[in-house]
Image (cartoon, rainbow, N blue to C red):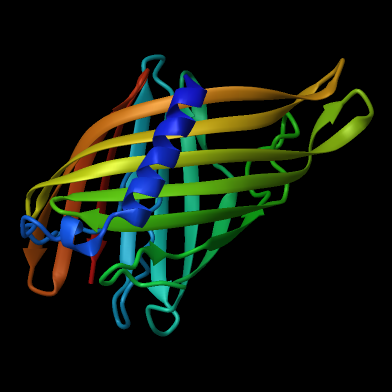
Length: 258
């Protein structure tokens, strides 16, 4: 299944990259009133000068466990550079809520989308070990992600490849070991109306985990998540809310820009 997803991601990337501009421009697409804040796939757009964004998401699975995140994004001071932080909180299933590892993010807008040009905004993240460490899983680390975005008619295509590195995050056969976990992702966002989008997102993860016999092993997981999002413009503030299925869990989110 993961191989099929990889081929789909590659074909989507190649199709968008080589499609002639005349083909991408016909018929004339409806304007997108919402450009960012998907659930699983990062989009290659920074915030404009003078605009900051708050993002809240909440996920609950069938066993009652839940996780929420709060992210705030700021241009520094223009769209070229962006700083943000993410604070996760998790709980449920009889346990008390606790803050997880905080993320400090920097994203650089190398390319803004234009005629015959993709949007590209690589991100570098510092992972701070601020979460509970009963099992040794809360460790410092780094994350890099390379997101691309391109509008094709009434559809936005987003895809990315990234890597998460954790220092000494588990004990293998030779003691504490560093873990490196790559992932690839892609999504299609259909502009049903300027402020209402239908979404399908997919992520393939290849997590490295400690293994007492082998040192480390690789765990593969593929997630396909359908969802929607809707927005409202109130003066200079835009509010967006949405929901998506991610078996066996439900994810909801909201954001506001001002």
